[in-house]
Length: 402
Image (cartoon, rainbow, N blue to C red; front, top):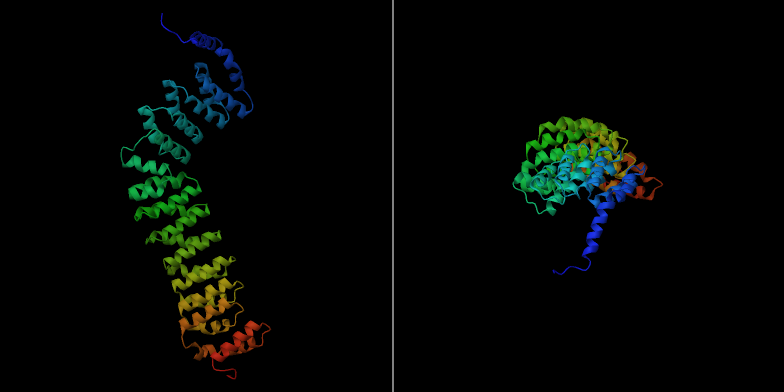
């Protein structure tokens, strides 16, 4: 007589009892699926999935289709993944096409332990999903299944799904434009910005066409990132939309547009930027002043001269530096007056600017015209201003000069 495990009859008895009482054991869980509390329903879904019974399977499918709470539906979809039959796989593959990204992500999760070829093929397609969470989870599941890309296309989308935008650009070049364009249309703001940065590494005219719509984004960071990258391309397509952004309502976008116009030396933007020297935002005024110096528009001299009296010392320094870069002799007299500014950095900037315009500025008629103001400054109650005025007057030939 063959030897038997002493507890064999207990194991058989347990199986028989479970089969007999299983409907009664499931009934409390099935009742909980009707609870008004989503957390209670989710817990019931998880316990039902552990039973792996046909009745539980049917209940989970119904919950996945009909429950009003997305969290409960997703839990049911994931739970169905614990069932090994073909019906479960078919159901999950269908849910990969669901309109809700949360459901699609749950379907990917449910398929993680299924190794059939049709499952892997569907997960490869999911790498192109419009939702980053779905793409990312599909990439993780495929990695866990030791899947390897069959071609460059699959490798590209696998990199994109993992968030490896730089890797995709490095390995695939212009082929990465289309996937990154999809990110710009469907991704959240951080992903869009990351995609814009990656596109900036592709030296191709199609990059410009892809990024131009981003200039109209309602998201500041997306718009600013696009401005910065597009200004690195020598394309006439970007000029008109870039100049238009100089009047944007957001000061950070205006700043980015000004800096881009300066980088591209857009003469057609000079007039608009000159008007921005009166902007209510001090950063905008400062950046506008710097930009006019880089563009080199002498038409801006008068406006820049007015700016050297700005209440913000950084703005005054920026205006002075640009006057020196432009080199218009008309700026000599006001710059000489600025040599007695209360801020030491402003005074130093004025000295440097005067040297750029005319190294012999102390002997110019324009400098002599500033003497009355220098003498008035000599009588200032501020010791710093008095000392600065005395130094300038001495540099110009002495205190007794008319």
